[in-house]
Length: 244
Image 1: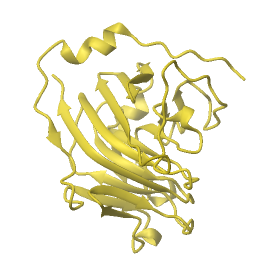
Image 2: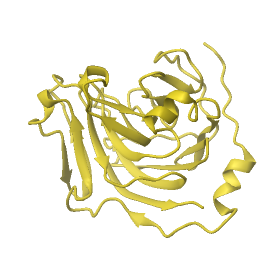
Image 3: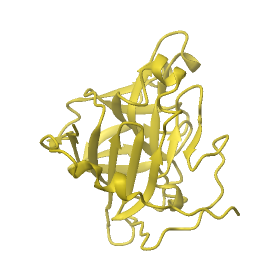
Image 4: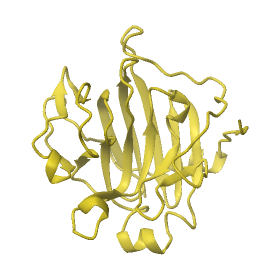
C-alpha cells in the first residue's frame, strides 16, 4: 500500500475570507427538484432514480442496476464558489456517488456513449469511506483520479487523516457534512471538519481539453448515480455562495 499524507494548505484554507463572499443561496427547497434536471442516456430517461423523500434528495437504485450514468444536475452555473451540503450514507448500499462541480453535460453524437458529463467530481463512496472527498476527473480525456494523482480509476486504500469520521444511517441515522471551496485551479474539500483534499489543478483543470469543453474552472453542479451501481443516498441542506 502506498502511504499518502493529506496536507492542508493554510493559503487555500484561508482564501474564502480574503474578500467578501456573496450571499448563501439554497440549491434545494426541501420539497421538490425545482432547479434540477436529470441528465442521462435515452435508454434511462423513463427510469425514476432521483426523488424527494423526507425533506431530502434521494437516489435509490437498489435492485435496479441496469442503467448507465444518471445525473441530477442543477441549472445554475458557477466559477469560484463555496458549497456545503449534508449527505446520508447507507451500509446496505454498495454503490458509488459524488458531487460534480464546474461540469457540463454533452448530449451530442460526438460525446462518449452519445452523452457524457465532463468535469471534476468530489467522490462519495460509502463502501470505502477513505475515498470520500477525494477528486476524480470525469472529463473524457482524463477519466482518472487527480487528487491523489493516479493514471486511472484504480485507487488503493489510503491512510485516514487524524479525526476522520464517516457516519451511516443504520448507526443512529447520522448525516455527514461536506464543504468544498473552488477558487481558480484550487479545490479544497472538508468532510465532517477534516480536510480530505487540498488540490491545485493547474495544468489539468485549465489545460487545452478542459478549456475546449468549457469545464474545470466554470460549470454546473451535479449529483451522480454511477453506471450499473445499486445506490441509496440522500442529500439535504445544499447551499452555495459565490466567491470574488
